[in-house]
Image (cartoon, one colour):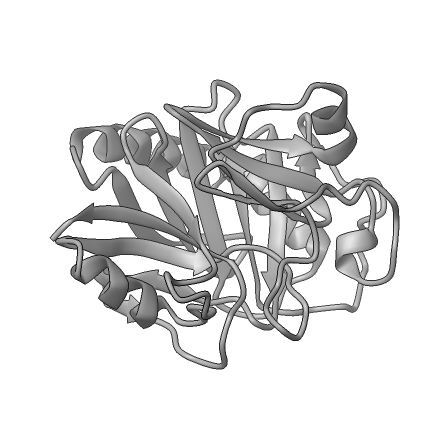
Length: 248
């Protein structure tokens, strides 16, 4: 199964690269008897962005609101996922950059909740690449991110699972996250079909998809927008939204 998933990932990368302007491919798969939806984004070609506030300063909150706003510009949302933890007013908990503008600074210290379960990390989008970077490593060597979101905990850190994940944990939620290839050429997003532990979710990225670094985006609120497979999850308003933009 692990070899099959690694092969699937390689094929998906090739398919995304061949997809031209879309540069994103989503599929359902099973890993260790658990179902997931995985979307591979060709970071070298895709227009991958973060969305939080519209032109009037109102929180987008929903995938449909982002798609509608893009439609007025002759564009559309080809893929989207909730993009990191947020406060009750939908403002990001940690580091957040949109269109090169920093809206929230990096939070390096531990704290309550999953975000403060160090090490946490930053998903940094730059022209031609995307990277999941552990927070302290990012502070040691800052990158000039066009878009960035901080979340936590890290799922995979340089090929190893987060040291505080427990194989026998009883904490289970539907979870979503993102991992990146070593060359920054591909971002791989995943959401579980059913409740999973951190250890199980981390193993998907490390063992199933063979990614050296991966970051937890959230749980319970996890949602996916993937019209190519007929998926448009709805619910209460989200904070940051990660999405791929294409021409209409």
